[in-house]
Image (cartoon, rainbow, N blue to C red; front, side):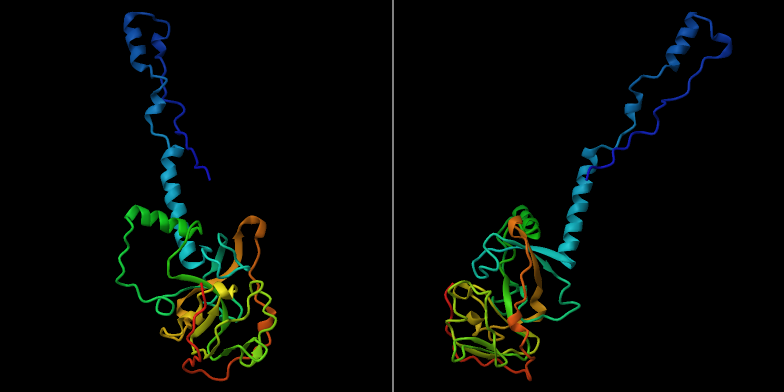
Length: 285
């Protein structure tokens, strides 16, 4: 957007006319009068003009303010830093996350979400000291706002497998993951060659929480790896930032992360309760 370049409204620098009685005189007195009434051709430059250079800082501030408001309340871009969601999302991909998705709707099984892992995946860091300088911190925050670099170290992106009340088990006698006794089959979004889970688990998801797993199960440090933490590996819905609804980079792979049809047959869990885990073994990665 180029700024409007306003030119001063005084193109005519002033009115000056010779008196009727001295129009034909060329005496010294009249010469002095003419000199006094003459105006320099550059007089119009004395009136300040709004230039692009003067408007540029204002435009930058407005753009940053709009970006901040959009990031805070509507949509935020996130950079994918790890292999945990391959091949759905690859390292270096950028996704847009809809922050309003769950303010007006419910979290669904199969959704790809971004969440804050504090208190579930990560310990509280209220006392942590940011060792970055103020300029480095500001530039890093701006870059992460546009998905140009890694965001907060406590932000994760995973797929929702179970919601409050669900009984999630892996694996059944056929090696399948089940939710409320319904096999999630096929899990065709998994990384090629991966099994549903090398770590057996049996958990009932507490109300107001979700059980999440990466699509690259053998390289994902997800709910299975945090069963010893508060919530038994589940994440509070209050910590969910939003739903990843579109990959915007690279351009050749712009698409929408799908919600797999395999979850459609799952009925809601009949009850809620404390998580019950049969194994605390953790996956690699």
